[in-house]
Length: 271
Image 1 (cartoon, rainbow, N blue to C red):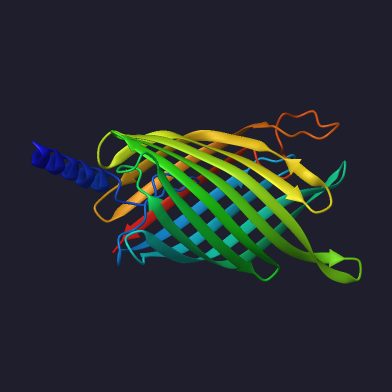
Image 2 (image 1 turned 60 degrees about the horizontal axis):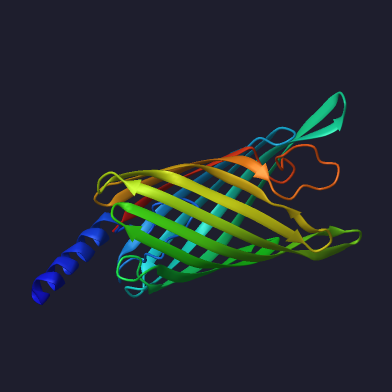
């Protein structure tokens, strides 16, 4: 009987790993799952944002190469590109369109401490550094997730520290910004290839001069589809509410620093 239980449990773990072999089912929320040693992924990210007080469109793109260092540790390097078009109101009868673009490089590491199937809860840690010509940022995440049946729940606590350089009078100075973010995702897999769920993120920014700036909440549907050597994940996130409004603000949304709508698509290939 004991041998039978061990065999059945081993089969359960194997099937679960097959169902959740990719390390991403969401686009914003990270899982503790890591790539097996030697397995490599190439991921293409596209994030589109729109809807501020004035005209605003932004497209962020990322090309990421990911590799399993051990069965519990993975790393990735990626190149990030960002393009923005912003409408600036000069006066009541004049508006101009400004365009900007930037390029940056990032390196991330993720380590799985406990497994979301074999352990009561999965737990992992994540670290990332990003470098651009005008800024440097550090990011850390605490990762929690749990698999039960064909369902997966994941939750992240994210902290960021950023130094951005800009002109201050006759000098170039760096301004610090801190971010505290909470990401959550739940998905149901209808089979080994297709899943639907919901994803949410609460983003809080703290700047050097003004303190806590805002706290918008985004939430919306997420879809995951995977084949033998590829996967596609898509999330649509409208902004629902801003929890930290400043005096005099009438809107329940933050449309100064954030958008009404953002969406992200990840396309990944394993080899």
